[in-house]
Image (cartoon, rainbow, N blue to C red; front, side):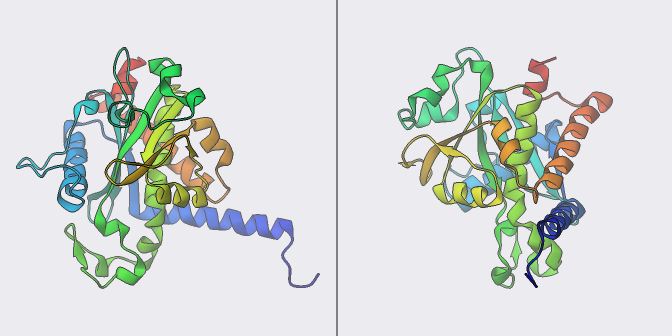
Length: 274
């Protein structure tokens, strides 16, 4: 049939698009693991900006730091916006041991109705929670918002290149992919997330498909518990995100390796498996 692309043509186009996504992302953003005291403080400050000052989920404090008890056994990923040298996003992996709880076990007890996938069924070292995803407001702006409140978070959106704006939808996905690398590296088998259903739908459209394991509850807004494994993320990942995943994996592993060279503080997970 004339005009219809062959499967080979379609696959080539998909691979080309995937390479462009990874290239554009790497041009403007740098994913890393927060290992130095300075980077960890940047995590807490960014979370304060988003969770306290912008969204009002937690009270504002003079130190401009958002931190809780679960940070004592967490690792953090960051995304740095290269041209402004500003951290755009962060997420943490809470990895309990012994009697330590996941955040959803403490604050959303009873939210999980899928008994087979309840974290209490598994060894503590086999579970984690991916939480405190924070994306600076500047990097949530759509193209249509480009000229509204343009100076946000110290960055003038009007000065960003069109290619940078096109990367914005992939920042959240990149945080989950970076967290996946940490989960894989330390052989954690079961990951949990409390998230808004609309975010779960958005990530599913990109190819990261969380399994809902309970109803929507009120917890910093309407959220539901979700379950996923690193293996499922890998198997479901579409061709359009594979080069991005490869780049993120390379950068995350490089930041962990660099910590040993420069003597930076080792991550909770890395220290626990040394």
